[in-house]
Length: 128
Image (cartoon, rainbow, N blue to C red; front, side, top):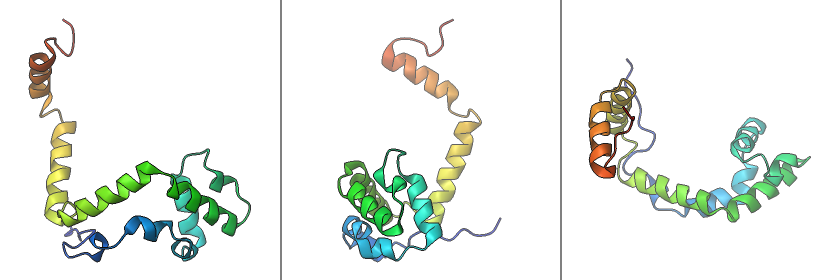
């Protein structure tokens, strides 16, 4: 398996800038090509006004308005920056996270979860 490159380096300057302001800036949105803008639009909720605009300028303006008033987006950007500072995106961390996800999917923690759930809630996860 090829060595995975980290998404961010621990010294990333992304943790030092107001990333929310940068991403909400129309000039940043203007720099997106057609494919990137289309991808961004596909990530927005279906009722976002930007999706229904006829021009790129209209879509960019609507995206900016949607992002500016979106507390969830602001919180996610802040979490991304904290994670980047905390080396969450380092290659070693990502490998461990993927291994843990595989173990979980294979049922490695099912017994522990069932016991913990019963102890915490006072009932079994699956009635007998």
